[in-house]
Length: 207
Image 1 (cartoon, rainbow, N blue to C red):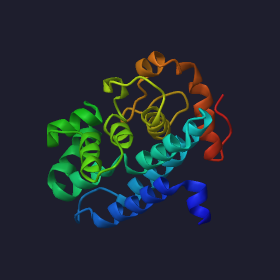
Image 2: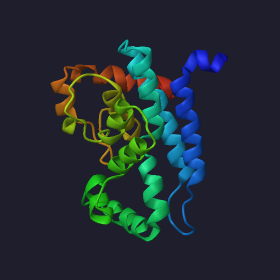
Image 3: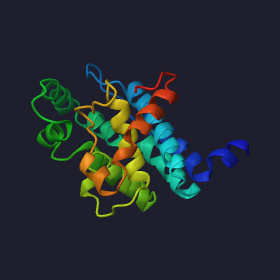
């Protein structure tokens, strides 16, 4: 009961669904893909996105949706690697060449991105529209018709900040959509979110 009170029933359901999803899929032998690493990343994104949402004083319902979306934002990768292992290995090779973005490489290999596959899967599972939206557009929030700070913004920020290796320098695989952040009026808050990432990792502020 204490966990339900602290996290909320939606967040607990998201945790259960995340555990079930990561337990149900297996990377085929020989495929250079770590489900354990993806699960750790997803957990870290969920925690950071939740803190970002709480810092914006969003409602408890939105914070819970943010946490669930963070946990499940990359579940489409499990679908792609488990159903198309050969294509996934080739996709990783193309991505490693550094000539195209992750999304472009996925479209070339599978005809869709992992974000789109993730969103469709969560829609089939009957998750809330705000969760489906946050997951579907987490790499490209500018394509989302809504322009308010919500679960999508928090998950996009958390994913991009955690993928970046150098403070202030976005990752090539999960770049920050600065145009979107400027449009909703929060671009000037980026330094604070970099510091929040560092704090949660037990590091010194980057500035």
